[in-house]
Length: 155
Image (cartoon, rainbow, N blue to C red):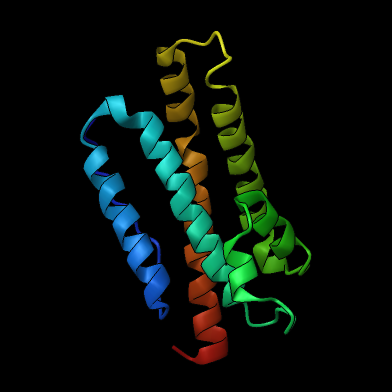
């Protein structure tokens, strides 16, 4: 495979999230060297995106005061997307749409993997065909965080 893909997600100012994201980014980039690792690559990318979405939610400038960081950290990726959707922020629409698509793909893969009659080759093809969804949500998150930094914090 070796497409030399490099995962880039902004890590900004939270040391805890920065360390987790960096660990996952490095692991994913190492795994990209072998096609046999498509399944763990996809699942790790989903985890990376989940951490990024939680980071985004924790640092969302207009979130209600009752949002507790510790409670957000316990949410699933689907629950995080539902919380983000409640903000009705037009700038988040692509994150919500692509995040929902990613959750559906991940859930289908993880919940049906064992009981499925699908071959590993078919599963790998499905992952390859849908890896662009992960690319899109990563770009959406990056764009949004950059937008917030520029507009609200003048960075």
